[in-house]
Amino acid sequence: MISAIGLALALILLIWMTVRGVNILLAGPIAAAFVALTSGIAWLPPLAGEGAPDFATAYMKGFTGFFADWFLMFLLGAIFGEVMGASGAAASVAQWVVRKIGIRHAVLAVVAACAVLTYGGVSVFIVGFAVYPLSVHLFREADLPRRFIPAALCFGSVTFTMTSAGSPEIQNLIPMQYLGTDAYAGWQVSLVVALLMAGLGYFLLDRMVKRAVARGERFEHRPSDDTVDADRHLPHPLLCLLPLVVVLAVFMVFQYPQTLGPVSALLPGASLGKWALVVALGAGTAIAVLIGVRSRGTMPAAFSRGATGAVVAITNTCAVVGFGAVASLSPAFQMALDAVQHIPGDPLIGAAIAVTVIAGLTGSASGGQTIALPLLAPAYLAMGANPAELHRTVAIASGALDSLPHNGYVVTTVRAICGETHHDAYPAVGVLTVLVPILGLAVAIGLFSLT
Figure 1 (tube, one colour):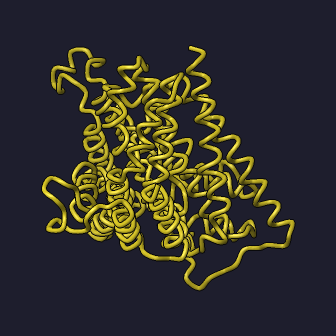
Figure 2 (figure 1 turned 180 degrees about the horizontal axis):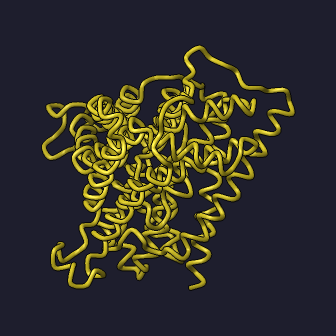
């Protein structure tokens, strides 16, 4: 009982600290230490009994384990995003999207720009940095409240694109190593759910913005606002799409080398799994550098920013994965895990509940999957769950409660990128990145049950 209360209070404490602006690298271990205190887990190795876990070891194992597994993907994703920005490719693509949609649909333009870059392989953490300057320009021209910029960025990045079939984001790749699937698992249902989430989410966001405008809210200029330089030479937008196309094409080739016929002899005999993203992002970065040859003087700095951004992005996630690693040792967590494993009925429902809850506890879609799947995948597969259906269900489920206020991406986007407060920006973010994906998850399970 004490363990359950402690786990709940620790999660509340973690959310409260992040809402109050405490750095997640501090909030994560503090909340995890509280879990250890209320669960009878020693704080340091010398204080633990022989063979017993301790807070420091468990937290750092979770932290460094996720770092070791995914740093190369974060690194190349961040560098790719920075190179796309430095070359002018990201601005060119985004402006092209705006010209096609029109200034009257500024919110839709921001969402669409994020969606294109995210599904093209740009790390979700980097998309916010790349699109934010354009978002400010659009919201200023349309005179819309800027507190909705984080919602537009988050919605376009971490909902209908991040967990959809074929997405090169790691939230869609993690299940492959545990389920023996590929990135396109359950694509038919995924397409329906993605369209539903995109349509419903945009309707809700547009409605919230219009209501705020009707109440008299307007754009507030800040001295630090970046502006889009109208005199800067930008590469042709169709050419700028090439790096994104290359990322998707190379990713697909190394997912399905057997489909290339005789050419497949030059490639590995089996799919590279998540490592296909390393090859794809490397190829996309090389193309982006060539496209930005006129801006070659800015490339060294772009690579440096990408490397730094990758460390910030992955350590934010690692901080909550470490919290989840300690939380998973508590008796309350183990009881909850046992309960969800024995939910009667469709295994997809049990998997969805389990991953949603764990992702919420850890504040991370990728972290929640990393913790949940090694424990749950064997049991659910043994129960007869279809691997492709389980893959898609788990991916969509991980993108729901993960976006609670303490989520590393949410904190980075709301505070670091947009300079907003959780009080002003998070209500819209929560509706779009928590409630909409939960509805999409329910629809996915319903559609899978009909097949």
